[in-house]
Length: 521
Image (cartoon, rainbow, N blue to C red):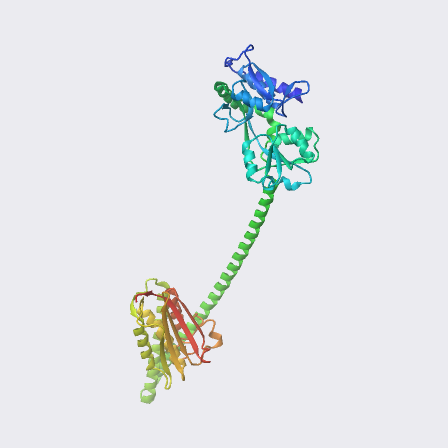
């Protein structure tokens, strides 16, 4: 394997020659490239003192392309850092550090390294990264940012100088975990047969692995050549195993677990929303079906209401026209004329209500709010209704407030209130009718209560709907759309209207409405 890699590197070096601008380095004055004694598999020195590692293979190609003679200078990590900063060696490779960026020069990243935590098998609770290090003793090579992060997470960081020894000590139980780079963890576990250890990714940011030198011109030349080597495939040929096997950014298991929970919750939410939409659609379909039924019944009732007076008018007219003069007594003729007139007025009343209902439902500019004295108009309505009450029936007015003036359309207020009073008057043969009103919370509340015959069961649910074929809930003499008109008016005003049994008096009906108003005083 090593022989094949050497052949590839040699051919790449010959295939892409560069100019002989060696930046002043010669065989007599070579560039010294400092390497770590034990930073496998990137840099290391074997038992015979021979240097090895991927960094050496890559640097050999780089220096050949730059035509720079160089020699290796093995040393420990602390000495290498000091020699680079103080310009005692010409070149090294290390992680980018913002603490040293003003002391030396860094090249662009050759590749990036990712952190892992190594733990003993059977202690999987230690594999959950920074979430599981609280109170744990964690060993690592010197890295102040990582030490600070572990300290904030509640861990006890221990800085070591020998990573291999730290891993052996972890295997024997000295630490709870060791933090290192992914390629180091997997390489050392395999090479040293530490079969009771395993590793997992950490959510720490990757570190850039760069060339470093006090010679700025050298770093500039290296940067230019690194781009070419990346394009030529040299970087992949040398560091391919680290970049693909060890240095890809693997998503931790707990992240996948969290994503799974989120997807499950999202699925449940989508199912819930679909069920809600299905119920809404079913309700709308049911409402539409009922609306069609109501419209059909409405048309049927209206047709009946129109035909009844028309038939009477036509029938009585035919009778008058076909009866020879002198054969019908004058009193019978007068009675027929009165019936024709009455049915004509009834028909006119119904047509007017149809036109009014259509106007209310289609015209948003129908309302004309004006200043209204509520006490005055309510007493006027009551006084007008008293003249039509049956003998012995009284009408009381209960006002929760007095002297209140509001902005409301007086014509529509009279239409709705008077219709409710007329309903009560027509259905109350004994007892009393009560008109109550109140103004509060920017709303006018009006209630008409009677002790009449009450609401029939079949009309309780649809008393205001187009189902009703009567002007009032039991009136048979004057069929119409009175309560439907009242509801249309109140709905347009943004209010509410309702009806219920008069439980307080034990009989009769209570009809009420509430309409928003602007209170003036």
